[in-house]
Amino acid sequence: MNKIYCLIVDDEPISREIIEGYCRHLPYLIVSGSCDNALKAKLLLQQERIDLLFLDINMPVMDGISFLKTMKQPPVVIFTTAYKEYALDAFDLSAADYLLKPFSLERFIIAVDKAAEKMSPAVPATAVVYKETEPYIFVKAEGGIYKLSFDDILYAEASGNYVKIVTSLSTLMPAITFTVLESLLPTDLFIRVHRSYIINKSKIDHIAGNRVYLQQAEIPVGSNYKEAFLQSLGLR
Image (cartoon, rainbow, N blue to C red; front, side, top):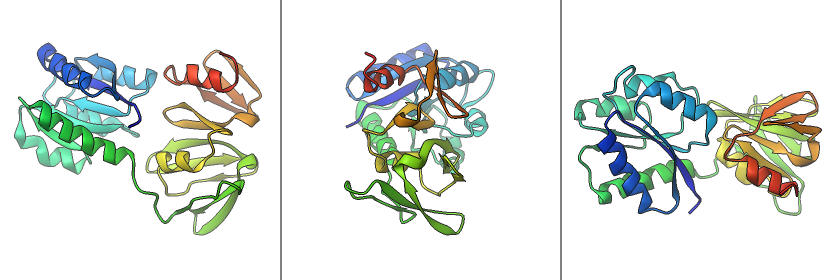
């Protein structure tokens, strides 16, 4: 299984320690951060790659439900709380699962498996998988079907339930997930440099600090992606 980068948000230190301990039983879970309120979590979400959020509900400053509602592109969420009355609200927000404290390791693993399933959706009918010998894909967008040559694609950006694909001539927003698009693009040409960006390596003009420039576009490079990115360019 691919590595899943996690953030634990809970105002109780013991609860955070328990979740961290459970994560250590699953080697593919990488704890990228742990904090006690939503504002600290917001900062970490901007700085680190986070695929899975373990989120308490009853916290100071801002409760977990309200915090999730503020996020435009939230990671997959598992709520961890002592209050069962918020379960309906949690699932209305498409949470992967709702763990009532105290929860066992077995129940924790079940929740993580559900979250992993949400991160790996089946390829929908809105995309046509390319053959390895063909340097293009077809996507449905804006009422039409478009053929996209890999050489024309500059970068792709996660945009809510859609993906924004920027080419040298136009911008398309097909109704497919970012994860699905990433699976369609050949890894020798494209690389993910941020949790919200995939770029075409052949279109790089230059790199400065934590920014990569492609024509007029300035793309951030996430700290968890930078090492692999530089390695792919032969710079490590």
